[in-house]
Amino acid sequence: MEENHKFDNGLRTSQPSAKEIDDKVKNILALEVVARAVLPFATNLRSPYQFYIDEFQRLREEDPQNASEKFYDAYGEEYFLFSTSLSKNNTGIAATIDAEKRSRELSDLIAKNPEYGWFVVGDVNAGEFSPSVYQSQRNTPVAPGSTEKFRESQDPYKAVAATQAEKGWIVYNQGIEIIESERIARGLPNLNGVAAEDLKERKQRFISELEAENPEWAKVRGKLDTNKVVNFLKFSKELTSDPRTKDRNDIKAIADYLDGREYVREILASRSSKSIDAVGNADLKEMRDTFTSQLLDEYISFSRVYTRVLEKDDLTKGL
Image (cartoon, rainbow, N blue to C red):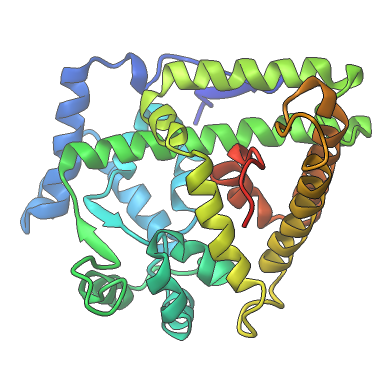
């Protein structure tokens, strides 16, 4: 199939996309998805879009954790709407046997912060889709006594908005990977400094354009504030000392980040300005950015944690 999206020097450009399809058509397509999700006779209906619905279902059964990204890569943003699901995943834990097993082993940790269940289960959050696990998640509370389940139904239009936000994360991560790859190829420790000015500018322009194109993603990303970051860091710190999790590579990456963060904060405390972005603290900002880049280079699993949470860490609050 002809590719209908591309990246140009780390910036995303595209052919006519779902953004350019008017709201009326979007709603019609959304209802196609909804009908096939909730009507028992829906599988007997055929539409011009059935191929894409079936394709996403196939990918989800093979690998629910990466199905959305694989679908996007294969069919682009015009058809990404057909990855919409009326099932809201409250923990981010995929419906796979290995993920289910680990979520039971670490249920006490998930109960403390269900939003980061995907982080708790770590690298086993992948594998083949399991219908039995899917049903189990719909019936299992995220914590003892909670009315919230691991997986619940959601409003169709909220589901479409969530799909748009997920598309934004896919595009964002792919764009950042290109910029980071070029940084590494140039032998640059971070995006600060004269030699990386063009890369830094491209990253900023890329983010601005993506926010304008995908307001649902911009809305979700905008909710990442200092309090949310600190909440995550306090929670993740507990995992770095838990004997069940501390030896995992993804948790070691977080432990290294916490150590580096604390070191920079100790020096920052002695400075006249406590802001990492102050001109007088440029050396500390470069130090922070360098060790963060090293973690991104060393640990593949650190990327999702960084882009979805830690990128907004301004170091203003301690743990």
